[in-house]
Length: 478
Ligand code: BES
Ligand code: ZN
Ligand code: ZN
Image (cartoon, rainbow, N blue to C red):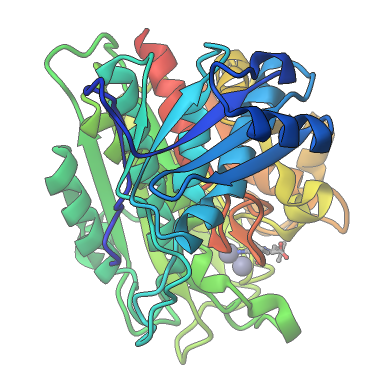
C-alpha cells in the first residue's frame, strides 16, 4: 500500500505564528485594512466577483491567500463549497512548495475544517508504481486551524486517513490485491485501529454453504475469503450491532458472460463496497466510538476459468434458497446475498450493504450520488442526514412488490437477472430475499470509480461510502 497520509490538521497553539496563511471570508465586507495591506485590499475590491474567488499575495517571507466563498445556499451546499474551495487552493500550495499553512476564518463560521478536508482529500495520489514521482503534487505537512476542539480535529484527521485507505484499496490492481491479499490489508487496518479480524477460508465457506460466493469463485485459481471485522468497545451504547457488508469482487471480468469493449475498464475497483465498509470500521475503531460494529466482506474475483459457473446453473445459497444463474456478470448480488444471510446471526440493529452493484444505478444518476433502497423496517432519516453532512447524497429508489415478478423463475426460488428496465432495483429486490432485519442497500456503482478528478474526489477510487458511514455512526453515538 501507499504511505497513508502526510498532511495533519492541528490546532494552532503558538501565538506568534508567522508562516503562510489563508483568510477565509464568506463576504467581501469582512476584509479590511485590519487584515490586509491597503494595496492588497484595493486589488481584491477591483477584481472581486461573487462566487468562489481566490487571491494570492506574495509577501516574500510569507505567502498569503484570501479566499472569498460567498455562495448563498442551504447549509450543506455551502459546506461543500468550502471543501471544493480547499481543492482549488491545494495545487497552489504544491506549486509554491508550502509546508505549513494556517487557516483563518474571518467570519467564525466553523468551516475552516471543511476547507482543510478539501485540501487534504484533493492532495491524494496513487503513485507507488511510478519510478519518477510527480513533483508538482507535494503534500502539506500541517494545516493549522483555530476555533476547534482537539477532538473535532482528530475526527477529521481520522476521516481523511480512512478515505485514503479506501482509495488505496480500490486503486491497487487485481494483481496486487486479490481475495487473499486483501485480507492482509484488512489485518494491517485492524492492527492500526484496534478492531478484531477473523478471516474464513474456503473450507469454512464451504461448510457454511455459501453457495453464491463459491459459485462466483469457481472460475478462479485463487480461493475466496470471507472477512469478519468487529469493533466491540466495553462502553458500547447499543446492544444490537450495526453491520456493514461490502461487495469484495476484486476483479469482475463478467465470468463466462464476459464483459466486452470498455465495460471491463476499472473492474479492479469492483470491491468499492469492501473498501468503504472496511475503512469505515477502521475510522470508527480509531476514533473509539462507543458503538458495536461488524463489517462483513465476501471476496473473490469473477473469471471465466475452466470450472467457471455458467448460465443455467442452479445454486443453493447460505440461507437455503435456490437461485438460477442467468448471467454470470450479475455476480455481486450472489456474494452479497450469502453475507447478508450470514449477518442474521448477529441479530443486528441495522445492516447497511455497499456495492458497485449495477451499471443501471450509474446510468440512472451518474457519479453524483448513491442509489439507496431499504425495507420498511429500516429508518433512513439519519443516513440521509449524514449523506448531506458529507455530501455523498442518497437517492431512494422504490422497492415495490411488482418488481419481484421480474426475478421469478420456473426452476428455482429466484433468478439473478431482472428485465431490461429497473436494473438497480431488481438487484436490490434480489438481495431483499436474504434479509430479515432493518436493512439499507447502497448501490455505489456511479460515484465509486472516477474517470477524472472531480474537485477533491481524485481520479480512480473516490472512497465514497467511507465518510458517509463514519458520519452516520458518529451521529448514532451522540
Ligand atoms: N460490477 C458490475 C457493475 C458495475 C458496472 C459497476 C459499471 C461499476 C461500473 C456488476 O457486477 C455487473 O456486471 N452488473 C451487470 C448486471 C447485469 C448482468 C444484470 C450490469 O450492471 O450490467
Ligand atoms: Zn458483474
Ligand atoms: Zn461486479
